Image (cartoon, rainbow, N blue to C red; front, top):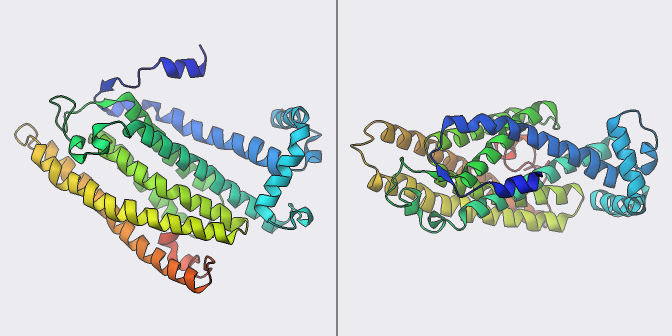
Length: 347
């Protein structure tokens, strides 16, 4: 049985209570993401786009042989891919660009990092919408806490596909801690990013254990949607497409306002603060219920405070962008706004 057949054979609609033992599959997802990124970096991004063909006519290991095999098999198409890739990264005059210079190498590395993150956030957003869009609580927040049937939070089962979404997110951010230390370009906001990744993993794990999975899936969808436009803007900035970068940044700001400053507090937080109290059986859960309620809401409100703070910095950046004639201002991208760089690192 192939992998696709195996996935199709699984009953993703099966329901069960979330348990700590479910995280036994986390190491699989932790290894899945670096494997996919390694393939994209070394086979797709580099071989098909950035590296001249002549560099791989000699090989002394398995990776070199794989490069050679791909180049030999698709040699008719590689030259076109490389022209498109270099034109995308280096803009006009790409034929004269030396990809071996330090600046161009750094540009390629940063572009690949953003391309990888864009692929993840896009896939995570589609997965979150697939998992949540047909659920009753996608349009009615009251169903975060009641149903199906007579189930009431925290005694609610969740579907296997929702568990998969959580493992997907937890695996990515766990991998991101490893990647930040050993893989990605070290930047001035290293400590902030590390704190962000640890906090995200903690929030994902605790929301799963406290059975806030339905709410958590919506929160993940809200954040991933904005981050897609962030990475598109960064890639556009790296390749000198200022207009596209400006458009992506404006869409990013608008999505931030609509999703994180309006929908998140007035729908999600209102539900986690008020609606859940109306449905909680306080006699059945006199201790666990209030502990989960206050702890998780504290984390969510802290997240809202960060959203507001980052919005203030984005507003300054937007004003500077308008004053600069549509270009992303360099001073706002500097290290003095390191907390903002955690989410919007255009540098």
